[in-house]
Image (cartoon, rainbow, N blue to C red; front, side, top):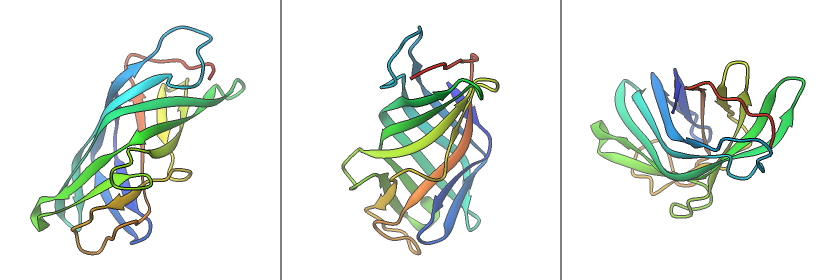
Length: 167
């Protein structure tokens, strides 16, 4: 399990952001050495809590089998470049009775992807705001629209401490 403090979901097309006080990633990491970069672990769920936009409460949940993949390792900095793939989730705004689906190429594709960097010193996976393919679909909320480009950022601290030295 990994936890993040402030996490932000941003619709860069509509220039709107949802700020959450925290986020929890649940899943598993493989142990051992000499592992290939593909599917070093799996994120089973991302739960965002304390989320608001324009002073309204927002619920955001992403569930599924989302592989955590190693792309490259920098031995000098002791960091690994990674991706989280097969992302599919839902955002709901109860105060407006509206929702949207987060995914990659369609609302049912289950192929959303974000890039991230894992730092061994802090045992933290930082989700990056660039390099992903997330979009909104099935939008029923005002201000945002289908196919809007979105991202989320946060730094997930792993517990117990984790070290990644390769993909």
